[in-house]
Image (cartoon, rainbow, N blue to C red; front, side, top):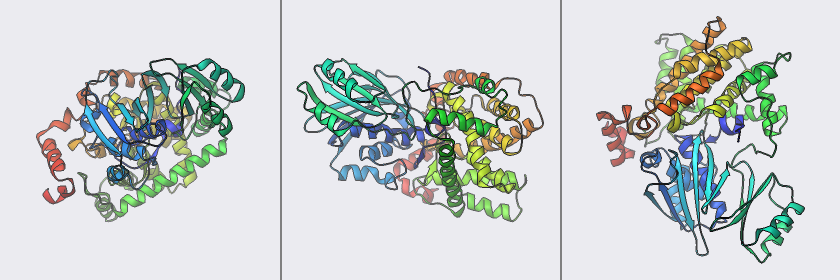
Length: 525
């Protein structure tokens, strides 16, 4: 089935806390679904990770545990209590254990979770697909496909035909499927929660053993017969023939169709996201503190050097570097950021857009339009490649952020649609094959430097495109190549802490220091 990404689901978002969207936000969303599967009454949890996946070595240090615990408690991804979620989970009387065992599902970001209370036990398998996006692929031994973008009702029963006939005559639904495993249930996807009177009628039926109501965890819902005006760059150009729309306007057309929302709603949503990004920049520049991290607050020192004219490269470039650093430091101090397109790459895109906009004294309207333009390039990447470093290396994260930013910068500076596409193509070509090898098993270094590299790459490529440099390879083909290259990157170089800088002598020393005393790391350095 064709996947139609949403700018607000898949590309620019979620609003969150934590070092990694693939770990923190995705795990929280998976756990929110787990919570609904047990009607909020969880007593015991078994979490299992495959030894050859990325989570076996990173689940604690990169925030999967933190996100899971918050999700089991029903929290949002930006909840200020998240860093202390384990304590709150145990205080709630919920016991958990984590095992590393061979799993049937071999996706690198696989969660197998068994939950129980006094009355029942349920098992769920889900994967994190990048940027906070998820897919639940199995519930109680039945293959399913849940992305968290519907209201889902599960009716556990022994005689489905009568129930399905009643449902089809009584409710508006997008899909009804009967899963006939050892434990059978009817799955209903719908736009709204089923009416309470109908729920009561279903629960009273003799063959029904239990009913589960799973809430959406994504901001933009899906629907049956969903259609979008285009899903690739070439299709976008065909759609735009004789329309002469700018990239940001095409983004509004796409997201309006994808989300079944108005153009004004699209703009308002992006305005809200821009405000959060701007706040993160200011918070970072003022200085952040958090004990359990490798890098301290460095952007305030950069600001001092910039203001004293002690740096080379010009005000615009250095403002961009400062903004990228500020956002990454907010992320690493558990502040609120926007994954754009991921938490690990949250600095590159907004750092480049805000940095250049402020250097040129452009207003927030220009920034909002630029973010929409970037979001549409991200849609093409999400649809045909990936944002997950566990699947495609850092190329998928900072590489994507740089390509998105390059296109947006061209448009923000009066370039043509074709020049924006050229900038994205050149920037992505420059990023092919970048590995993911975080030091000390934290999403800080070399992540910060690679975010800065992506932002400055975006500026360079935007200027090249504005000067009509030839990009040679069409954007769609570059994105296809990203997918192919990512598939060829060895698993030790895809955010597993098993290769690259992660296994240098110094990195292992840092990791050991953090494990021994994370709150005293700076004191011991």
